[in-house]
Length: 176
Image (cartoon, rainbow, N blue to C red; front, side, top):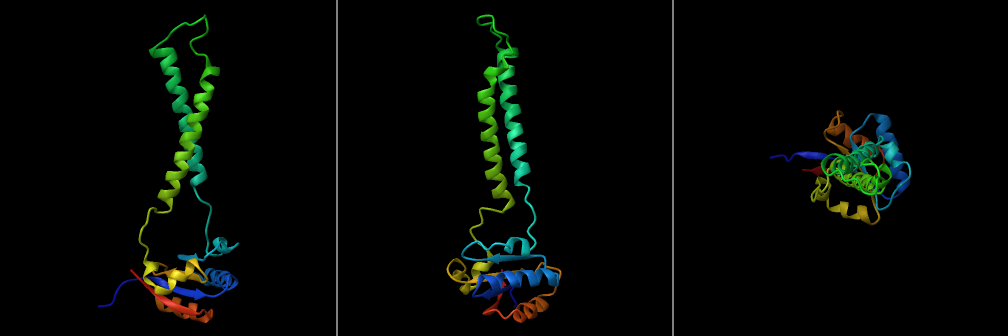
């Protein structure tokens, strides 16, 4: 019985080779791919087609929601629910609402950033198919990997042949 494949992965010795391979793969028409390296490599994200994320918009929405929630809660409690005239001050004394509104804005924006990032990255993920390749343990030490996923419209055999043409150290099949 043939096992299902997650993708095809090429192993490189130098970061420049990975960057060039990622650019070549994108130019060849591959869109569903990931790059793995022991340290950040400038330009790899753009080379594999990474686009802007929606996390900043999510943080803005979280912050604005927190501000409205805090201000509305204070307004309701001070003006509608428990209206007390203390020292002749107006019931809707907005300057006293600013500190809590600010703090709640920051708190909700931070929660939106953390949880939005976790959800959008599919985390926590204790298992990933690339861990099935024994050589992948070197991705955190000395090697650089480019993985083209099977879900890419291009055929798997074409991907293997293409990755072999880039002269990597090795090409591995990543099983599910």
